[in-house]
Image (tube, rainbow, N blue to C red):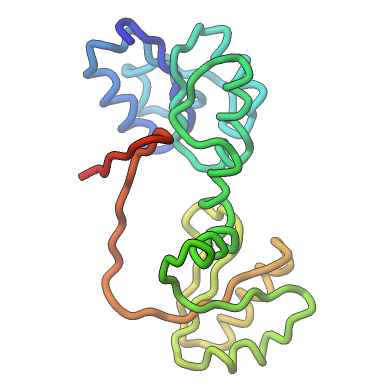
Length: 206
């Protein structure tokens, strides 16, 4: 990919870091970022297309002659950015919407883990017909873990021993999203592993 034109989608610190790393590669000729931020100025050419405008991003990538699109946020991928780019034969570093839904829906991720035999915390799915108090009683081994089913920018989980706070977050999540997950609390240290897959193999990142 010598002399590649790369479009980075997003406006956060993650996208700044991606642009910075791309700028050090001799294989990259041009870096564009949409919408970008103050940090990407000088590393990339910023554009005004929102990260939520899938059609606009595809049009931008096509007009730039992009050889690769790198999606920083999860939301555009869940909205089908990679799918739309594939129609115009532009590679996207990121999964198609069906696979991105592992991140986009916690319930879907739970169902996949269950079907694949991956250990995961027990959970209830609550909706507008659920008895919130009864559900909280079932998970009385404080604290309660409440998770919105949708992407929430890192603000979608509440871990609390305050019953009123848990009940309020559950009610608000059901009102906005239609459902919410109430999950067993698992004590211990959290560890994350990032893996890149291409359909036939995988590489774990350090």
